[in-house]
Length: 258
Image (cartoon, rainbow, N blue to C red):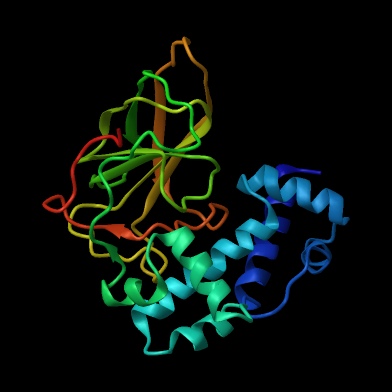
């Protein structure tokens, strides 16, 4: 079976997810759409997208909820139902965990996270090191430069609070200090200068560029090799970007979470 055949099957399932976000979709439904056994489908979907079908579907639902909150006057309850949640409370909790704001706050702030924390205390479940992860962000030919976000996440889904992050004013070198032990994905994204107003997930992501490296394993006493992130145009096979947009540079501290 060729790579193109497998990718075509996964794209067909993602299209099916988009059309049926409000329905109770099962892995069996998706596997039938892909025309593979359930076991084989789950494995190839993860290989192609970097995450499971269930997590990808959940991310699509939150992405659509972001679009509806910014671009419509539907109530939170109506939006919750439209994207497949039977409980508004469950939807709101899931939305806040993924995006960083409650649905109502996300709408009130126009899709912007106004006060993303610039620091994190040591009182957490992570074991911290004094290691720094350095790297470089590059653009594919033809891509326009813009502010670049780079963060460490536990999976390839850009959601929740990154354990470390930095903002750059364009492609170039970065450093994430005091990296926790564990296995992390280094995820980057950017939009060109002049398009920072775009609300990711609002249907205006044509200008979005994404890139990733990892997983990177971090253990005490080891030397972390520099990483390279090549930003390219976003593709439908990429898990949706669920983070709210950060506020302007004037309201954010530029630099790694410490």
